[in-house]
Length: 89
Image 1 (cartoon, rainbow, N blue to C red):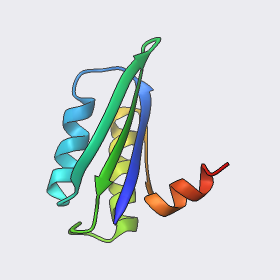
Image 2 (spheres, one colour):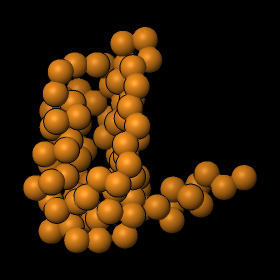
Image 3 (cartoon, one colour):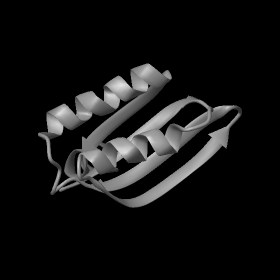
Image 4 (spheres, rainbow, N blue to C red):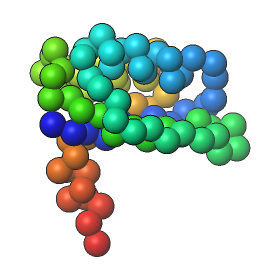
């Protein structure tokens, strides 16, 4: 199952590393990644394959959210089909 991870927050060292480590620990593969800095704000968008994830999707979402709180970021994950339905014109 594919999903999208979005990250927004004040730029600081280690954001990408921390998220990639968490995803790796949960056996989630990163398929594509785009990130940029907009006026001191870090923004990142990742397409991931969570089909082999070692935890339920809801728990993965909670782990990412907790990491976001710890790092003062907003981190969300959405299943690809939900993301696509929300962004359909």
